[in-house]
Length: 577
Ligand code: ADP
Image (cartoon, rainbow, N blue to C red; front, side, top):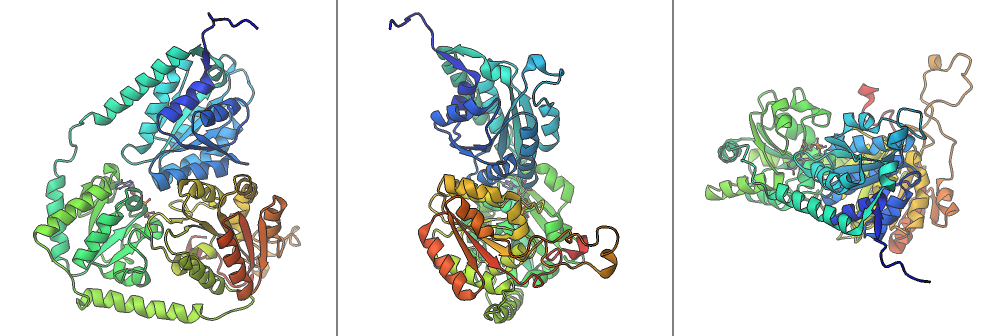
């Protein structure tokens, strides 16, 4: 066959988007394909962006969110138009709520047909806007590279969060010459580079001043405390915070996902003396954590009314909102390094015998001993504590690099937070700022691809697991080293806890809104796809399932039967239900 030497290679919008994402540094993308983005997924993969195909955009979105947190690079979510975009909003909003970088790329209906009831038509810019820092639409193919670079950069600038890029079907199908594609990508990359190196005037000339004041406040404090949030973990501030704690002897308290920034086993951990630590500290250096519901808004009665907060946050609005005694706007790692430097010039260190340190360590020790006395018992049928202890020990036995723990559920997550131990940063992923249920298996996929050296262990309530359970097929398809442990207590919070006056009316014989099919065979869902399933009811069965599945590093579900009346309604949040 004769070759047409005059033909010019053409690049369509899908290929251009895939290549632009790769050129901007993307390595993984999570999503669900369909009209009009199927080709975008394969083109991106061909360009070097691994595409992880999910069964539901919601889980894919949670995966992209967690990937952004774990890697510090934007997680990428690809969705189809209309309903796919709507499903993707779960992950997009979750990322923004947790201050994690995520770029959602969605196909949308053809522009000429918009407003006429086209297939899966939706004003996706309007739909995504409430949840993002930036929502942009490529109206022609030539827009794609510039907007890809711009939107990716926006996810990680300032406070990280979600951004949205809309690419209509007609734009995905437009073509341009190969040479033009190369030029557009190069120009977009160059523009992004120059934006990065643009020395924008330092907004906070008072930072130096603030650092001095912070060091002085900590030095003069009688009962200082360092609070470590997931913003510090995201900033990779672990070495700086560890150094601060070690050189000053100040006790530290991690938030749930701040666990591991400094090892939970560190002698200055105030986790087991939380109420005392926050109730009595006089100066609290809060690094990368909001004074929101998780920290009781920084107010009495949980905190002392005289506590002086020093807030370190990359987001100026956050500091304006909380009005702390002292605000330090900047990257957590950099700010804590500066504080360390300042302290080095005039060092101080609270000895273990310092009354505040002694009070915290004594209280923590007492509480740990009380908890251990409960944990050591082998209670069968299982309560929450016995299996949690066995899981804790199995995870600890893995050593370093320690597994990434994914956790959700009411009682399961609460008990897990108290019992499971994090000794390395960014090894705990849970329901987060929003208390989002359904994050589980998406988080597992993200952790497995973002942290390939680590095993991933999910400890899930049966309700939490149910939101994303179909993604066990995704685990098997990609053969990911993920062990999902389901605490199966037959429902949300466990057994039927309705009062008699709630069980009346025409539907009184229906199952309780909190009840699921008893003793559901969740392990068989995994077996249905060729993964390994275990049903366990005793300590020995659980130990053997954990040891076999951890060794195999293959997808597994361990269905742990729990006494349905062992937990509390709403976990520890009854007051909000
Ligand atoms: P937690 O749930 O652990 O309490 P939050 O999500 O409430 O943590 O708070 C995290 C905070 O960290 C957010 O206010 C966010 O702006 C901030 N943050 C994000 N990245 C950085 C960074 N690099 N340096 C400092 N703060 C950061």
